[in-house]
Image (cartoon, rainbow, N blue to C red; front, side):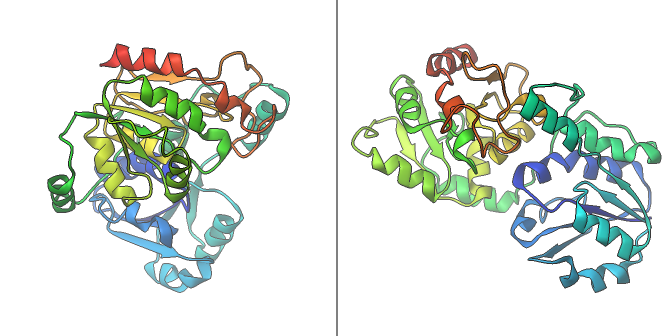
Length: 325
């Protein structure tokens, strides 16, 4: 059997599809398994030993449609389920099973605080696409594969030992997901452990705006300094990971880390909380704000400019760290 899996974006969503890939590989004999995603996310899949081939495109699936047609797939597992995958499935003309997005229920939760969302993680909804193949979730959690040679080279050059630091992920696509600078500063000042800050160049610039205040001996600003895979290695060897709702949170889950996840304008109710992290992990949401989530992606706050993220208690984070140490 030859199967194509589709999931175009983003980092966290692609990592969350990893149990589908693994369970297909481990349950079907004589399987050839391919994955279609965007060019910029290929690195998330290239080291996955369960995949035989990864196809990518930049702007349009027409860039690869002829190659996909030539593969003569038996089945498409559509884990994205949008207009582009609808067109793709039509053009491939083979049987397909598609992920149910629950967009209307999400809309009701976000706009009217009417919670009809099933109490089920997104991973289990992805896995539901395999029910017709009689494949069940193996309950082994998420996968994230890094080339062992690359990891060894990076570890030899990285100045800190394994489990000697906390990884603090301050990045995120939208401000509504991100712990504000003053909260980050307060947190760093009140933790005794070494802290590695992770994010992109924008996060680095934010920290540098408070450069004088951030001259704390235990803080290393690694934002924008490393690739995502290198940041993943830092996550893998951290003692604790404190993170916004972002892709590195799911990578931390794949490594079964102790995670303190922070939820501003998004909410675990949407089904994307850490999946099978260390059992002691903690979820922290804003104090005194009940009508959440404000938005699915964290791009809108019902209360002003990222008010929910500002309401996350630094004291609760410190308390959680002390409980996990």
